[in-house]
Image 1: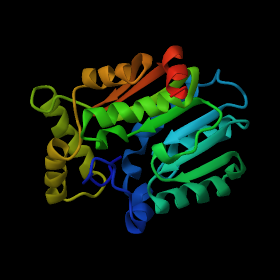
Image 2: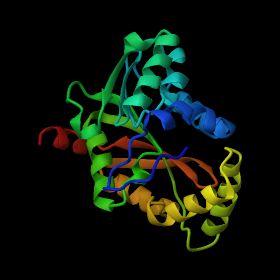
Image 3: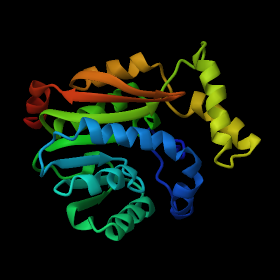
Image 4: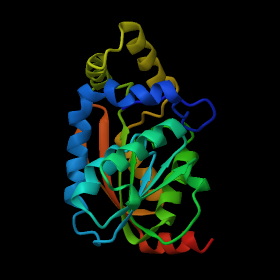
Length: 246
């Protein structure tokens, strides 16, 4: 649910130690992401039987593990800058017998070779680590350009106006949840500071405007739990075609 804070406008990759403990550390909060995965299954169930799914910031493969068993014809492309996280993702896919339907790309999305357009994309708890608005727009624009006309995306980020109620109160309630992961009071204090300085936690309406500017014709908020918000978006057909022609 949280990654190391950025130092240069990009998400800092997990090292081997953080990657190895990631799933266990955030297991107490799994119900929140499981609800989001259920929504993904429901909203994407009409995608083609051989759909191509782009997972941006795939991490240890949570979205893939939630979707692959239910859609045996789908192919997944997992993109993540962390080699150790991606290695865990690969091992999970192998254990669940769907690795043959996966491609793994260690790096950022911009370095992923272009090919056939994707039918849908996930981008969960990724864009919040881009502090610059234009960088955030660029990420979503890159995703849009890799989707087929009318292609879908489900994205999620921490979002709130932390300087006003109810955002400030939501932050305090969120920190109570973080304590369930075993975080100490000092770690929670550091995280609270990071949310205001090193992570782009902005009001939900601002994220919706970023999605629109990136080329998504419509974005519907489908999930909200404390600071966690998620949107289902469709790429504007003209935006996808124009981006691919550049």
